[in-house]
Length: 230
Image (cartoon, rainbow, N blue to C red; front, side, top):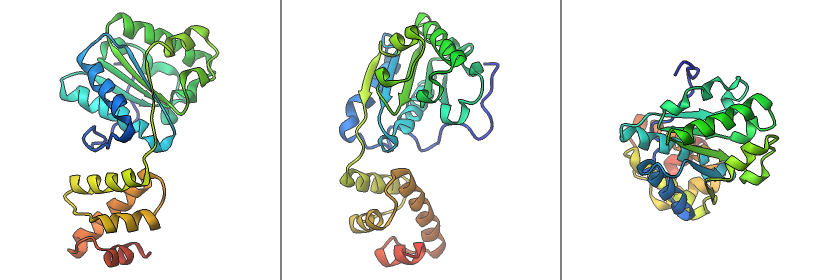
């Protein structure tokens, strides 16, 4: 592709299906995996608030595509929406295009026209798109009627945010994938004292990982309290 993503923009190594607890979102994950196996579903649309892991799932789909020898591109529009839609050119040569936060560029003529033509090229070439937004397709502020209809063609999933128990389990899973043992009572303590957003909780876990390695101590409530000055 002639257009290159700016440095620092890309998918995270740990944003995989294995590191995501499905919870009530197992149907969406199954659809994303099936989409890569079959070319008869050109569009999967995921919507929900920031806590639902929309970006994680889009990046996980790209990781899965890469593992299967496919070409994919993850486009975070919160970071790239101020550019002209040049990254949509020649996307039909990809196997999967993942557009995160598509709502950011709605109402902008060049972007809407670019997305419309991109969708048509991808569909005609038998390729796949995954799109995310905080709202359902019909709630997007789309000015181009043909684009609005295209966004409603695919499979749409409303992602549910994690419960407190699922957030705890997500912390324990993320810790285990980093080789850390996080007891349930310590995870509950972090949830009680730490930030609400799961992404910020993972940043807390990163800090604890470094502190634990440096001090050569296990994750206990006294150690967490000392390391984070809680």
